[in-house]
Image (cartoon, rainbow, N blue to C red; front, side):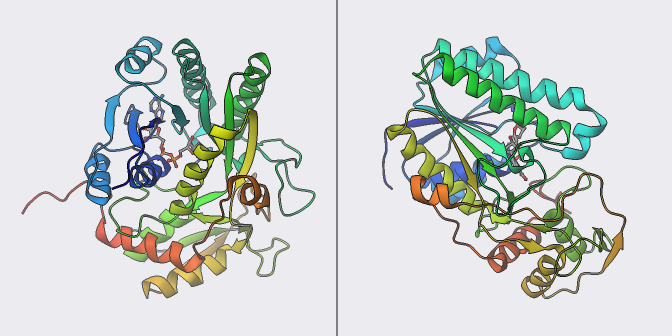
Length: 346
Ligand SMILES: NC(=O)c1ccc[n+]([C@@H]2O[C@H](COP(=O)([O-])OP(=O)(O)OC[C@H]3O[C@@H](n4cnc5c(N)ncnc54)[C@H](O)[C@@H]3O)[C@@H](O)[C@H]2O)c1
């Protein structure tokens, strides 16, 4: 195994994207420490990461909104950089319960930044989102496209970006990289880690997986009359392993950058919902029943990234195809029909 003396803190590192990033960092020889309150992830993730990489990340169950506990956590370790994944990500829940999303996402970020400043750890990568963009007037979406989130979740991400901008202006010692993810999907090719949503999934891939598995009888496709080739919405889906590798490239960039930078992490290609359904049928060998329903409020017809800035400055490019995304999502689903929860012995 390669070694690298750097210790990277992943907040929210037992979650979907964090766990895949932990694998890539450990494989590259980094030390990894995870702080997570396990509100949306399972402790079992850690042993799965160990099986894949041969290394177990350090772990502390800490809620980032508890500044004193967070500060104690920082006292135990010495960090070279922080990747801040922790947060609530459900668009739907942010609409029905905006205060929870704002409280969690904003307070945890503010306390994290205060503690980082106190402990002189000034290198940060932040999990941003393509939801911060307004309806695009031009495609593909570049980092300087007009911003304007239309749900509390997206606005919480935008507010954090503004906080980070102010922080970076106030103190040039900070090095901050904001990564705006497009639509992360799929799972690690081993099928040991993947997306394990609690409750009814609100995203296309985990829902599709459960339809293929027979848990739900059909996929509801929101809208069939968008101005796209087949009438369904088009999104830039990115394999979670490609996304995880983007963090590795961004860590290298932190060493040579100053101030704050923003990067889109996407593939640059859009797929319609019906194209994804076809690809998933091919990967699983299962016919996916679907029905068309009303458009969902706030959905924009087409969104895909211009990832060329990341390609030029981070030296990173997504490599996996839509077929890889579907194959790995299905592999994870069949190997873990109940997510991380093991079936009780008969
Ligand atoms: N998955 C996506 O589609 C997507 C797209 C764009 C951006 N993002 C962002 O990427 C980040 C990671 O997303 P994910 O899909 O891995 O989500 P996830 O829910 O799987 O992981 C987030 C982790 O953060 C933890 N967490 C939440 N609040 C916390 C708190 N106050 N203190 C400590 N831990 C806390 C959860 O337990 C979970 O393990 C999030 O910030 C999300 O907003 C995700």
